[in-house]
Image (cartoon, rainbow, N blue to C red):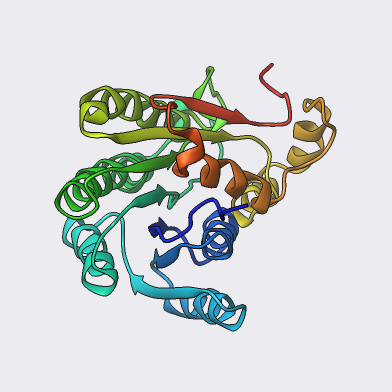
Length: 253
């Protein structure tokens, strides 16, 4: 069977660890040439070296999603390296400590906006322009969260930014569909990542509570979330656009 992303050029943000790193590895195994982007050079280099050692094609670029020029430069780098852009996974995000809406600091709210919402918007705009100018058609997947689908009293600002990402995804899907550019999102549930581990430190017992609320009875591995993104970016999902796909083990069923 032809690999899912055979001969595609793929951009992945937040690719130094967690879901982004798992996605970069998977996309390369599925035939893509991958540009990894994140803030931490050492993490990017480690994942890039791992992909190359396994026979894949990968490069990396430092990118801060809070800096508009950095975002645009990272997308431009993919085109400069590989000659075009076909698909993109906007996975990068930041977090803040859990707490009620009236305890969210202005600095935390602004940081979540800059990275988790504005950064995704800037990336999508640059990616659409790059796809349009090179490959002509393509696909984008934004990483949202099941925490965006209902009220989120523990992470109200985080949930709000991710819900806005859902809306941006749906609007972009409608806007760019006539050009053959599909835009979808995934909404992961409880996943074994450093982000969840960080929240667990601030809220002991969090992981156990989330597992208890998940019908499949466990955490997801980052690789499982990456698989859903790979399918949505592939031509096998060619009639799917504007979807926010829950990947949550049934937690929101």
